[in-house]
Length: 310
Image (cartoon, rainbow, N blue to C red; front, side, top):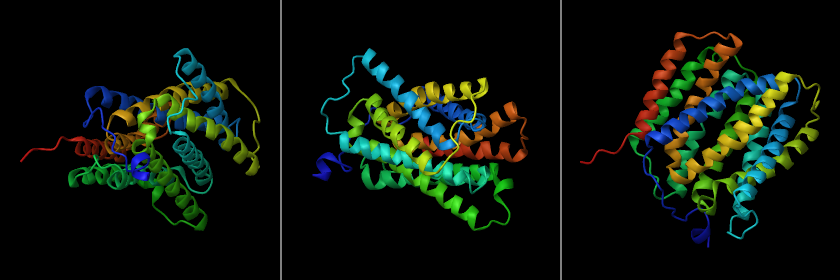
């Protein structure tokens, strides 16, 4: 039964390698998510972080429902995806809760290293649950190379003595990475891969729209302290562009391209965050970042290089 409907069902890919269109889209997505790190910092000045995520999901859910109605897409059709959709939504929701909690215990420079172990979990999950997505030794080396680039970029903040609270934060971020990778594999290896990307996203947004505000209350967050124009624009960017448009595009990519290959590109996201931090927040750039970019670029190339026939 599981093999027929669940995580062992072979789903044929539209593409086996990333083409120029997919690469351009992925770079755009990573840049957008890197800029989101700046937007979250701005919005944190007026809205508590977990509630911020909940409000984003509520707004994006409404936008997606309107868009689906405009496209005349069926929302409540029977396609055997309900169980898997709720499961993906729960993984998505708890991932964000752990990220926000982890950031309260560990520095961002450490947090991003553990969070971006996600492609490794995707690669492992692909070996176990997606028969047609087997990773080669070169691709594994590429993942390691890209991860070393992330460590290089954030090594200044990563080095040094850490206490138990920081280790707790690291553990929360690592668990969040596991949930992120698990969500990607679940979508790819379950009936969710056969339904429209819009419905896959709707499952996650609606579930998180319920869970994140409840989690905010449970965590006794301050809520909304003030709504300045910058806070409003930050929330608009996160809701309209990130949660609605870029996530919809991401799930379309997951449906049509190998999960392990597109996940490798997410290593670019924290580096874009550093670049935008330097441009918008006057944070310092260093030679380490240049080396990191080279390592990440090399890693992504190795993950996506076509196999050479013998």
